[in-house]
Image (cartoon, rainbow, N blue to C red; front, side):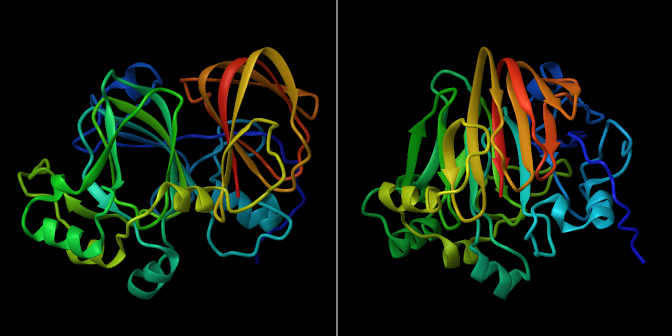
Length: 329
């Protein structure tokens, strides 16, 4: 029987899970102190509750335990009072793209449930930094539909139908399920997404993995799920709810799967508003002090100080000079 012993919850400093795909760079190692056993880190999973990737708590009475273990012990009220889903709702990553990522698309909930026995994947990108001229692929060119896209894929002319977008630090891009996309080289992003890692690759520049094999593509499934979007359609999905504020910050997204705010502190203090659910705090620049329950906690970029989870219902305040991405369901 699971022990649901009452615990005094507090802000959790989280460990990360790092991955080294072939397109990964060195910035997460050099500037953020991430370790992978190699020279590069392409992804740092800052909040993860998955079978093979689990965030652990690094501070306080629950240090060493995974979030999964804590949730099992205290129940779903840890996430939100009315949370009833079997799986943890969010996956949050830092991504350092030294090279281009594959051109890809993610399925929606209905397709993922029917075909993969999984959930779909809608995500949001916050551009933490970008090299001059860096660009992403986000969607199809105007006037290109599914039929034209399928023809271009089969003819090897996919570049003719993709929409490219120059990006700059501080910008936000919302990627609903079904939108063709790719992160270009020279970009560091914070990615907030549904807790799913389903990706259908359409094109991968004929790259080979570390064993010399071409990386697998998933063209037929991609053709099933890709769709054209207008900017108005994307915004309608991105701001489909009106949730309670997380941090009195700028609302970056408030969709069916997550709410995200950017909080900029300029030698200032903010009392976090009452919020019934958990909040994830990711410090992407500067440093801040979190005060909760009479204790003080340092949030800062690097050295595993950037990723914190504030359990549901805990009052807190933040002060300092920092940029934080605050996420919740």
